[in-house]
Amino acid sequence: MAVATSFLYGDSTPSPLKIDFIAFLRDAIDFSVEALLCDSRLADAAQGVARLAESTEREIEGAEAFATEVSLALDRISIGDVGSSLAARCKTHVREAAAEFVRSEGDATRAAVVTEKARAAQAESGERASVTKAFEKLVLRHTLPEATFATHLRGRGATHYDAHLRGKTAYGLEWAVALEIPSSHLLAHILRIDRVIERLEIDAPEEAGWIHKETKLRPQRFDRLYLAALRLDETGATIELRAAPDGTGSGFDVSLGHDPPTARLVRIREGKAAADAPYDAAGENITKLRSLHDKLAAMTSELAAHKKKLLSASFDFTPVQEIERPRILAERLIANIAPTVQQISKRSLSPGELVLRRLLSDNRREELFLSRAEIDQKLEPLSTPLRRAFEPLKLWEMAPQRPEPAVSPPEPALPKSLPPPAHPSRGPSSLPLPKPAAKVDAETILHVPSPAGAEESPPPPALRPSMPPLPPLPGAPPPRSTRPPRLPT
Image (cartoon, rainbow, N blue to C red):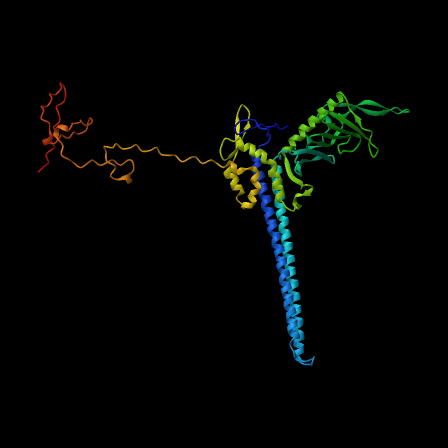
């Protein structure tokens, strides 16, 4: 039996979700887009056919008016009293030819309209089939939120079971999908109860006595019976048990209720004999039957992961492929999931993303997200009016927040004693040019030594201070000559 998975919101707070809602939302948007596009194309096609039929009738009316005018014009032409003259015959022929031409052309244009309607009906059938296909994809991949389900299992012959899953929502959607039973599964063949519980004895009424018939509670060997049919839903279960693998023979129908726990038995007679009156089990018998129910429920729950195909789908008791406006499917679905989407958006810490976290084993989490960019890409085929169907989700309120542009720190002010840069266009790296050379007194110049290893230029002779040189330090290398090198002549 599948274990329910726990999901957290993006801010790591617990959520009531038991399905991967992010993956479901992706396919739900795809289905809604397909339904909206189909609705729009159907409406456009219907309007096109209606305009064609209307314009055709106007043209036919104009042509008939023209034929009438021709007839009136011919009546105004005088050709004398000779009815069999050439002019009279021409007049009659022109009148009849004009009327016949208008009639034949009118029939041809009406036939063209009928052909166009048939072509539009065929295209409409394909459009509706695409909506059904999109819905099939949705229900085969996902469990719709807040839907209730019932599993049906019935034996066919003495060889196998047919299994299907029925779903239903509070907003009018109902569907059934076929379930595939793996060959290794216990339900791949007709199941005898002793393969589930080795010995199962349930007290049930039974008539006894040769002369005086009386009904007494006697233990019945349920483990020797075969599972003929099974129906499981949220309210309870119905189990049909029969003596033969093909579902024939005597046996019992067991009805189980969940709240409160109840068990009702009906003995089925062999052949066409009437069934016995229902009997309510009690005590330990209810416990045994509920144990059988739990084991069968665990086995059938494994089949939910093997959905094969869509068997039927309806909306408000109308088949999906016959719904006049398919967009209502998208609108109902969007309205149902809107509160959950808004809650996920509110608790997602990443701007522009819907985020959930799935709890995994050994204290690990997996992040699931759907970005606004991906949603926009899915909605791209829709026109602006059609996109309004998604407004209940408030997707546009989760738009990514653009970071504020970085503000460069203000440049430090230059000292007032320095002139402004000579070339402002060079930016902050430009250095101010020195003032023009002026007459400087030699006593105001301080000689700053150059860094180690750099050549030091001596001051000009006119500006050298008149002081004796310092004696060299002991062990110091002889001073370098400051005289510039002599150039070769």
